[in-house]
Length: 308
Image (cartoon, rainbow, N blue to C red):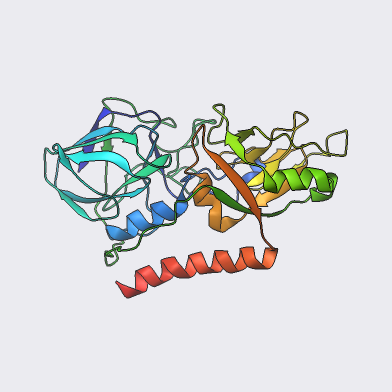
């Protein structure tokens, strides 16, 4: 069972929830930029939430199926059709042999996920099927998919009961919640006030390694860089230019820029939906609130699996 890539889209890759426990080798986790949407899409078709899918960015692809299967689209709303018939997100769709699934541009956000029952069948690399673009590992040949690629999808050996998803996800990226970072004291009250009160614009130079921000320079009160240390997902580093960088799914594992803040885990999926030109503000919350929101999101996914 497979599909053929007729058009790849702008940057379409195979992603699951990422590879972990390899940062000491300099390998970041990679994985879905919007992990919450990936989990929901997989659950809709009866996959384990961690199954691999096709992540499409800004402009989607076009695919022809050589066998019947069930699919779901999750994440941002793209222009999508099956044999020229409009289809919607977050719904299980029965695809027949020979049908063509087409995506246009994103209507909202930046990324959508094509989840297929059984998941995309590629080899694991360091315990994950995720494509790590910068290092050229994982996924299909370690790179974004291309026209003519044939992608197999497996028989669902670990199937669970498919869910019916009736809720609307909060995809509002105008506010991104953060907690204070390890070097938050490197920034005075004036810098902090600007950081959380004024909007940022996502730069055109952003990618899966880092979301670069413009329009609101934040200056440290320490002239030199810090000693290189570990950099977690969502860390907001501030280089000498004053333009912050959100460390994203293919982020460097160490760095010497001070970290003013960190995006909370519960809002990482919103960072994954930011695209160049988007404007947003940071909202500072306590560590306790961040943990409550993380547990709330975990409970939400658990309840989806248990109730449908």
